[in-house]
Image 1 (cartoon, protein in one colour):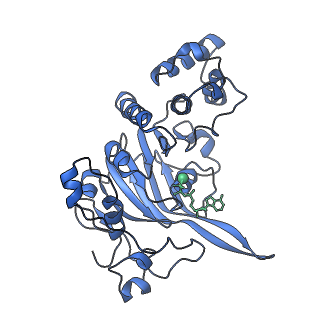
Image 2 (cartoon, rainbow, N blue to C red):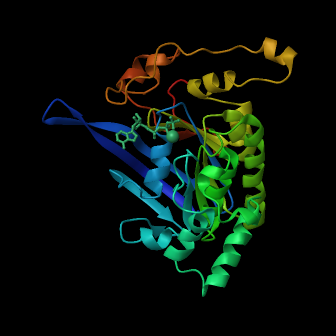
Image 3 (cartoon, protein in one colour):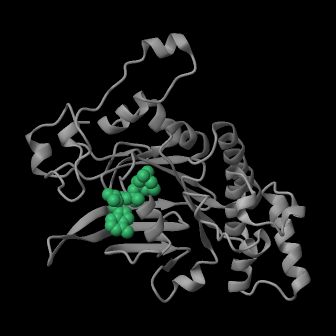
Amino acid sequence: MTEKYLLEVKNLKQYFPVRVGTFKTIPLKAVDDVSFAIKPGETLGLVGESGCGKTTVGRSIMRLYEPTGGQVIFDGEEVNKKSIQKLRQGMQMVFQDPYSSLNPRMTVEDIIGEPLDVHKLYENKAERREKILGLMELVGLNAEHASRYAHEFSGGQRQRIGIARALAVNPKFIVCDEPVSALDVSIQAQVVNMFEDLKDKLGVSYLFIAHDLLVVHHISDRIAVMYLGKIVEIADADDLNNDPQHPYTLSLLSAVPIPDPIKARQKQRIVLEGDVPSPLNMPTGCPFRTRCRYATEQCAAECPQLTDRGNGHFVACWNK
Ligand SMILES: Nc1ncnc2c1ncn2[C@@H]1O[C@H](COP(=O)(O)OP(=O)(O)OP(=O)(O)O)[C@@H](O)[C@H]1O
Ligand SMILES: [Mg+2]
């Protein structure tokens, strides 16, 4: 019997038409043939450098973009134009920037209450308010501040407001798009711990997007590594950390600081040469080959597919 997944993403493609010249557009392949699945209660981390397509994956799953191709199945039902309105109650998103994702003209009470209004999840005003205050408490916000506006809060508090809003509809799955990147390091830990507590309390699944591998490793059960619109490696979080296979993952991990000074001195840093190629002008074959020291002719000729190297550790590389 196949395992029951909460979310299945199959061959997802998101191409943006980019204008070159007056009449011509060419496709920018922000996400190109991405597949993965998330089990109920599981957290999948998604890492990769800026511009590799992480946010676009999250937004396409949520149908904030109409995907160019592929399929997203949530809780056994295909996500499409018709079903998304209903499915949104089960899947929510916390956005990358807590400063621009909250309406400055609305009070916190109304920001958190909006999804309750949209999905008509209360009988009367008193119940609505009770739910909102409960959510504020759940994410560690002072309920007395319900009538304040978003700009009166710090970055960490704003992100908590965003999380309370996402939780208002009791979702089973939340896309967290770099929810802590804009925050102070000391606040980052608090917010990450809160995500973990909420997962334990509510049993939600996350797609946790970040570029900080330390944070992602801390919170994720499995991790997927993206490069130029494709997943190049996906594995159990500890497996990926202890036994990285793809040359790109190796270079990402080699850049993670180690707190132990002796070990840190012994560590070899792999510095990638060259720049990330433009997604408008992708290299043939493997997208990473132009910066890979193991690249061969085969890598230029054909793009490697993700293949299982045992224990669900998938790698897309000809040489590893
Ligand atoms: N609406 C859009 N129209 C055209 N191109 C876009 C659009 N959104 C994203 N892109 C392009 O798609 C690629 C992937 O962008 P995306 O925002 O998904 O990257 P990211 O991995 O989330 O980066 P970051 O870590 O900086 O948030 C980039 O090259 C970006 O310029
Ligand atoms: Mg992003």
